[in-house]
Image (tube, rainbow, N blue to C red; front, top):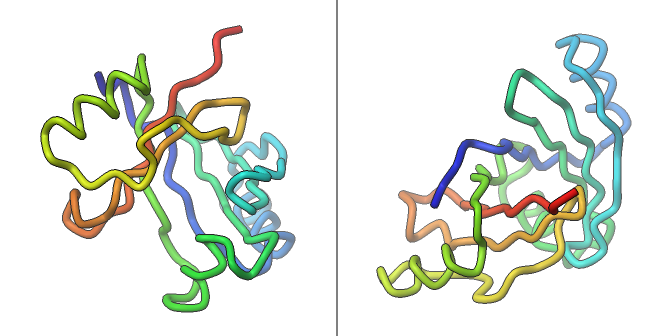
Length: 135
């Protein structure tokens, strides 16, 4: 079950420059940066209310974000929804005929489990499902 909007991810080519813009110009709370090895990206996280803005920059040119930047340039990459049970949500979406990029949970930022749903399933929007780790 979808719980809430978790974050909006924006693909960027210059992480340092964009961190300054979001932190110093917009005044958003900067929560830090981490590398997500499985997705081949660096992620800078900003908090705004109950939602995060994630700036994503490729660590390798052949990463999904690297390919996105090459094809489209900087901009909104995906919208992420928090779910209670990622495996159950993936099974439900598969049964409903949605086109899943990941049929099994992957490792994501903030030690979360994630999976992506193809943009063809949601009006051209890449959707990430995220199950936060239990603390």
